[in-house]
Image 1 (cartoon, rainbow, N blue to C red):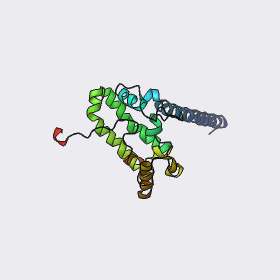
Image 2: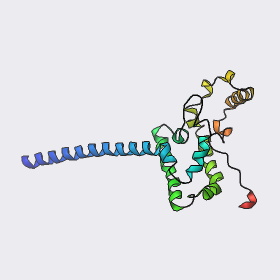
Image 3: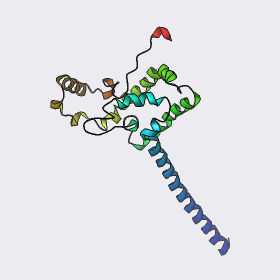
Image 4: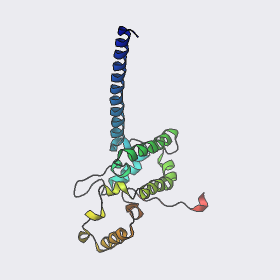
Length: 185
């Protein structure tokens, strides 16, 4: 290869490397932007069927409380760590798909599938030892002396048994759905 050809090939390689670098930065920025956008309360409640959940959530202590700390949809449903967060986002795409395809696009259709959908969330939370709950609530940080006698006893027992939050707190931010009759299926 002649000297001008080698110089041209080197410039092309540097240009290609530079474009890949810029492209990589743009890709990371786009993914970060997408995750941050889809983690907002406004995005989560923008679907028609999420309005019921939103109204229930507004009645909970996770929405409004004496300390002024608000836990939004993402705080309870999206892991903080990148790997589990990306998996959750990919799995959650099915909810957007079902909204668009009309499977859950009305309050009636959503209610018909609510028990199934809630159980999917509960199973995921049990499998992760209620990881998202524990980002705010941790047995070690609880002041059991400030809790009612019943709560103190239950939390102490749950900690000793290695129970996870969702085993007892299924109806915390949303109304707990009624299990459908087996006869109805």
